[in-house]
Length: 626
Image (cartoon, rainbow, N blue to C red; front, side):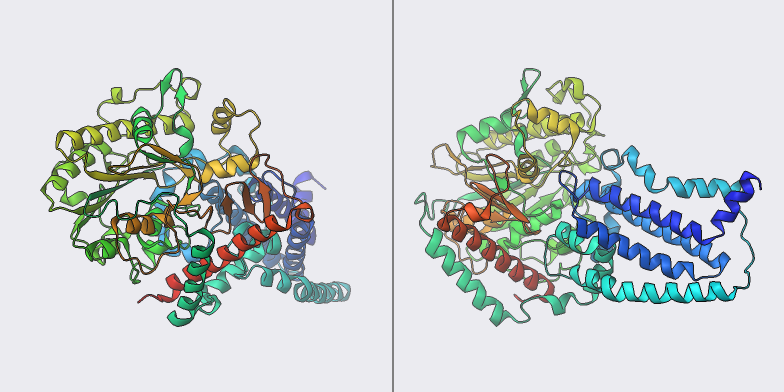
């Protein structure tokens, strides 16, 4: 028998099912170690669950006729390999896996396409290597689809046994793993560990059809009862203000500036002798700096806007804007309108991008200024109006507004892929990134440096137009700009912290820049954790506005923990990600050795987080504030 004949015989036999099953198992392990278990041991239950699923699939494939079995095995290989690859790419992009609920976001697929240099890795070819070999076999006519052969009595018995075994395994193991993947947790990593990636996706499809049934609150009355109890508990535990400045901004002009992808780690840092963000650094030193501001999810720009405006958590990445935009919220513009502020929203892109035309068109604001409403469109960076041009035209509009006004403006020049394509004068980049030149990380630093240059232009324009002194300016980054485990990022961070831990990297990933100019207030640095949900109640407190529904709390009060929408918790000293960790050391806490007071505090934080997420999820899915 020749080598070709031997290969053909194997591929047309049940052995082919076993070989492909083993290869798919190895690909799945590669996926786990590249995502949910990147810095930790993979749990045995996850491995056994994956084996169980593949044995079930293999048993059913084994009983099929020759030609159907081979085609079915190849289709199974292609589907699972593509699923693993897609999840791997998306995980690098957002530290989360795909969900069918995100179908409404496909129209924005171009955004992730811009990030391909960051999310594509050489090892990902392993997901398709065996498929490429098979294609080569077929093109080289090494493999032929053999005709169906009549089964012998022994083969029929063997196939019958395989069916029985497959059904038993599926009943005993498969169903239990799928159940584990149901929406009992908002932490997808945990869902995958418990249900495997295959069980997660089966459950995810089920969850898409039963989402409303799985929410905790079906009506506003029940939700508001728990909401009021939660707010009362916060008032009892954290109600005392650190600074008595209630109403200090009453009647003042308010500018809310959201900076694209500006993480906290770039602030007050130098590279090759020059500050990365000199203008932001000066602004923060002269005003109130929040050194521990976190994004509210592993998320998009739209999610940051949603949380800032509504003070509730976003849904799946971008879904709050793309799918639930018709909901009614007690939004930021509404509470300012009640005190007769002139309200506006500005962004240098078109209305269709992240559905902003529909989202903000439904809100009660006085002026919606998107790309079409600006007069000068002569400089665009990666498709968005350049930050400098955006700011210059915004100042002209602000000068014409009646006082007081509140304006939310979103900058975008430091957006992925950070190439600053379209920037007409690259001398505005003032740093030399040295060894990071032409890397994704180096491009990120240059993009942030340009965003900082444009921010300096904004401050200058405000001062020249007599709009600076008496105006409150809140500036913050929307979300992370880099993958959590970007190698150049880790190298950069280790230059100032050699004992960098995994917890440090996870916190660095969610921590964004934040500063607040409050006329009449001296420079101040606040180190307690805050997040975007806290912005709306803080502005209500400072401007003396009525705020009837916010899951966040006043940033100047004493609440000292924040949550993310995937069940992460950040306190001054501890970090929760399935387990509690000490931030200073990065070590997991030994629960039995903790003091009773510490246990009670952490338990309270965990229970509060669950209530917040249940309320937020129910409000979004069931539109409970309508």
